[in-house]
Amino acid sequence: ACTLYHDKGPEPWLRKTSTDAWLSTGIGEAIDGSDGASHDLGDVYCIVCYQSGGLEIFDVPNFTCVFSVENFASGKAILMDTFSPHPAKSNQEVVQMIEDVNAQERKDNSQKIGVVELAMHRWAGQHSRPLLFGILSDGTILCYHAFVFENSDTGSRDEKPVISQNSGNLSSMNGSRLRNLRFIRISLDTYARDEIPSGTPSKRLTIFKNVGGFQGLFLSGSRPTWFMMFRERLRTHP
Image (cartoon, rainbow, N blue to C red):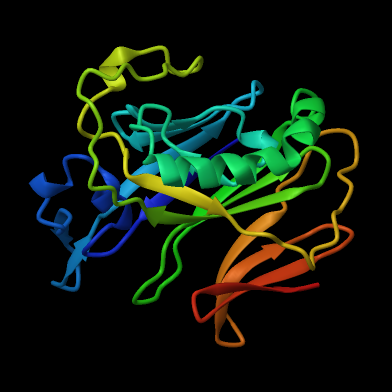
């Protein structure tokens, strides 16, 4: 499964999560339109999820891997770049405690459940952050909200990173990686899981910008659902 994400605006959000963000002025390249006004191009990324369960984010058009996560389909509580330094001990203990809650269930099911559709979008708003959606082959929807991880401890320079089985390319380990990017899982408790019929899966996720004045995402299927943004939170309306 794969999708494209356009980080629009005069200040593309994902740039601030890069280790070389200080090199950026925060203003993207602009081109002059036919109306004489400048239009910011922003940044484009390609998000790919493999059959092995790993997820990677590539910048476009270079297609350099800037973010990778192993076993995305398991529904981890926190997603972080494989090459990122480990968080402080206190944070690591909290993350580990959350991860252990459904560890056994993930171990049993992750091998046979895959990702059939991906979507990533950042809706307009002063403090908006990207949301990442994934539909699993069993009908489960994973929803993650991006945030910037700030840690005063930069970690040891001699620390050896874990190499993703999908990347396998040390050339991608450069300052452009989104090392400070994190995703936290959002529970969609009111959503009733829709069993996906066998055969070729069809596109079910549709981004909308103005339905009754709201922005969000529409899920088609036998149990259609509106996911609407309201005060930077996602509201579920079956």
